[in-house]
Image 1 (cartoon, rainbow, N blue to C red):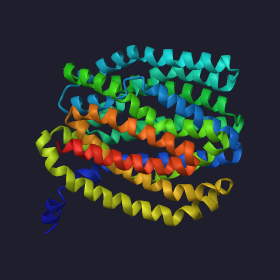
Image 2 (tube, rainbow, N blue to C red; image 1 turned 45 degrees about the vertical axis):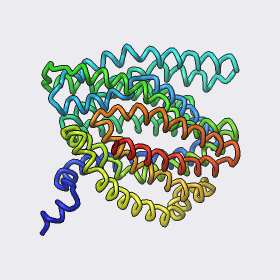
Image 3 (cartoon, rainbow, N blue to C red; image 1 turned 90 degrees about the vertical axis):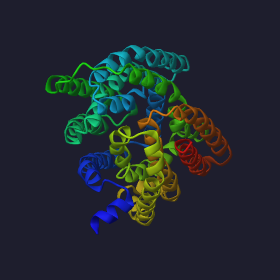
Image 4 (cartoon, rainbow, N blue to C red; image 1 turned 120 degrees about the vertical axis):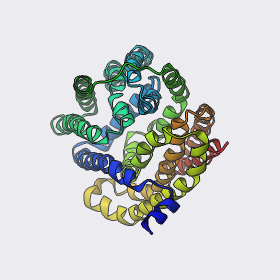
Length: 404
């Protein structure tokens, strides 16, 4: 009877439970540490400083879009097929391509320096120097995912969490200013990624098989991912420039917490990557509709639960951000839809479908457009409703491409 139910669902439940347990443990520890830092941000930083901090982080993520962000997906897929050498070769390629992000960072530094915004200028300078290193060395996670070694992935992430969140917490307590938090956190992250990369290089014996096709795919995927990365952060930039840093702080608390909440089930898409990589495109096309439907039911249940508890959560722990409650209740819908979308996008990555390149052009252009219109016309509410419309479009478009 149990086997019949599992066959009907179409999910390898033993694989899911075994591997999501490690990823969910990481999500849990990350959520706890994130919750602690959010408490400290709310109590130690003014809304102006926290909004400025979020703005600088958004700039760092936009600079990230000019690195080879698609290489990790390509490495996971390649390593899952037995090409270990793809991992190390991809790192050196990413370091070389990091010069592009560095140049854009220097241009941003000079722009804000000329406009006498020294805090933003020197924060971008720090990011420009460290970001290419961080984003190249973090490929160890993609390697371990490809090996399906989620336990080691979890343990290394805990070391990184201690370094990253520990440095942020200390910076908040002792300095309480956006610039020093950026300085300390990015330098600490660089050191942490380097130490873990060196440890994994010594611990794991890799073969020298390199899949050049995967490296080329990673480059192409990265190029097509520039617009999507910008899209993910355009809302913060618009709110900052239209409404100011305090409004961005309110929006950040309204969006970050539901995103973290939904993060408990996003790992399902992560662990699906190696499994889907082993299947043909036709096989993935056949099994995906049922999996997306089940994922949607699970995500919807979690979203309803969040809507019910969010008033208590904010009033108890973040009374400084009571204004965020109404925004957060609506924003969780956008987070729900984007969470479900990750599964269909993962299937495109796993099968190396060329449709992902079309998706990465059409989808961000539409999303950027609706967010700009929503933000300029209706402020924070406009941005949130634009996110709901944009994410719905993303889900439908990605699903359409998986079925072509």
